[in-house]
Length: 176
Picture 1: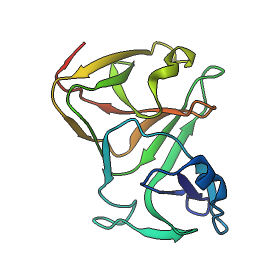
Picture 2 (picture 1 turned 60 degrees about the horizontal axis):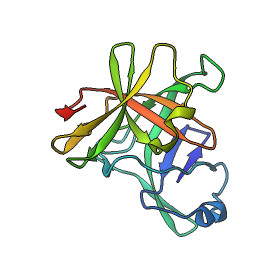
Picture 3 (picture 1 turned 135 degrees about the horizontal axis):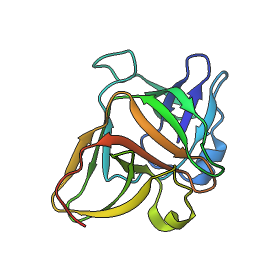
Picture 4 (picture 1 turned 135 degrees about the vertical axis):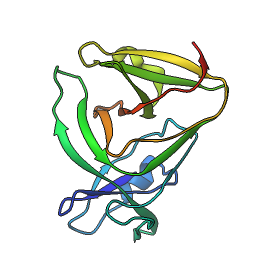
């Protein structure tokens, strides 16, 4: 789950799983507000540091949960078509990993590849993709660990099926 400080646009993430009831019960102090809860698509993840604090990951407690300052959204482009994703340049230092043998959903867009970071592929048919984009699934031959670019281009679908594809990234060896 994440909370946001609108004064500086910094996002603070609880990096451990939480239940829906725990999310509902969190009451961040002002000016913070709850900005979302979703399932991570990767097998492992870490943040190298917080925005603007090289080699330091800032943390704080909120309702007994430990949160880390992990990201700050930048320029936002609204969906180009109804139901489509918002496109956001997110400032973060995010290292993510996927196990060998696992299937990974990739969105190809404008000659670049974006990997699924938030959500589950069980409702791919419901996604309204950006013009010219398409989804495909690859099976990883070996573990895949990647540091997302800074800033990371992030495609967000903010419906009841929160999804996000992020990158661009260079894909590893895979079976298609």
